[in-house]
Amino acid sequence: MKINIYNFLICIIGISLVSCHCQNKENNPVQEYAFNDSHWRIENPDGSVDSLEIVDHQGRQSIVLEPGQKAFLKESEFEDFAVEFHCNGQVPGFGFRVQDPKNYEYLYLRMMMSGNRDALQYTPIHNGNLPWQLYNYPQYEGNATYPRKEVATIPLSLEDQLVKGKASDSLLTALRNKGVVFSEESFVDVPDASPAYIYDPKSSEALLFEIKEDGILFLDIRTWVHVKAEVLGNKMSVYVDDMDTPTFVVDDLKHGTRAGGISLYSNFGEVYFSDFSISEMESGDTHSSDNDVEQIAPNYITKWYISEMFAKDSVNFLQQADSLLKHKDKFKEINADKDGLVNISRFYDDMDNTIVLTSKITSDSEKEVKLNFDYADHLVILLNSETLFDGGMDFRPPPDKGTEGRVFVQDEQTTLKLRKGVNRLSFVLSGDNRQKYNWGCIAKLENLDGISLE
Figure 1 (cartoon, rainbow, N blue to C red):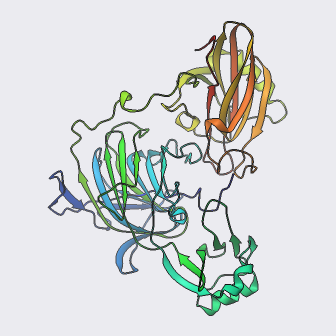
Figure 2 (figure 1 turned 180 degrees about the horizontal axis):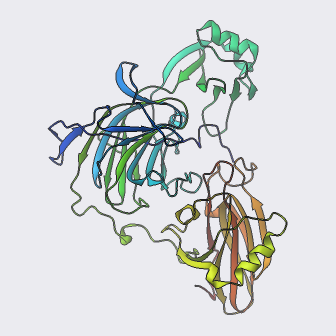
């Protein structure tokens, strides 16, 4: 499973009011939102209010957000709308239908991943957690092509210096001679499934590189990108540079159809935004219903009982789970998402803790059946109190664990030896207490021959 430094970083977007009476294709007025204190509120990571900073960046008057800063549109909510903006940075993001600072819908752009199937990501934010490993392609991630700025070209004779690890002195010198300065702490990474780059942890500077016939070309991802997002009912269509054809469509927004705020965030490197506008759109018959989303197969486990949270004892956690399982009042019934995914952040916000999920499987006889599953971050599976699986994803999981850090139901498998009658399947699931991002699972039986799920 490959994860580079940019795949998990995040930011959110916000937008503000000042009107301009143009018309969009629905004949609704387009409102342009000037960046000023009347319309925007800037927050620091600790929640304190900061001043709004306007700069001229690469030819555009823009707002700049430092890492960890957030910008919120004041006193305006939108349900169905189209928003347009230009952005410039490593991972710009856009939050919408914001209910409060910890609950909203979120779209962000991975500028490093231009041309890849995970260049764009939608994820619902519950209780402030960013479950990027849970919500993935093809439903929640999409392709997009972003422009690059050519920065420097160095001789092909230095190609042997472009290996994973600490950047060599000769490479740093060649770049310095071209006016590009990286510190001695810089390193090179050449991932299998994403662009090769050099990164300076001291300055947070990064450049991609490509081998060309006439030299090694270094490229900066921090250029202006034109983005439009249309949100109608439970559907979002995203346009990048081409404003006529969407490059990414999400058919199942997770927070439901309701009005909310607009926001901008930056959590990694400086991010710039310019030329924001919003137009409200008529929903008509566009709202999705339960029947509009493809129903999953009945062998997915979608009904669970979730326990209270507890602090996991690394030695005696099985006794902790057994003790909980004796008390029904410690559990409540929940349902998985429509795609079978259980996102624990929907229910709890403390990712330092552990919960137990249980589900009943009834079999007409003694038999074996395969259980396909995946999870984040650490999972123990029990069947009738017998341990079947004990594994930890960790933030940088081993190469043979899953696909690129994502949670897919086919990534793991174990055998359930069912007894005749009712069997109790239990997942003891701990959150990602390092990055505070991912806590969830998905599971399905290979077949339901002689088997019924609760």
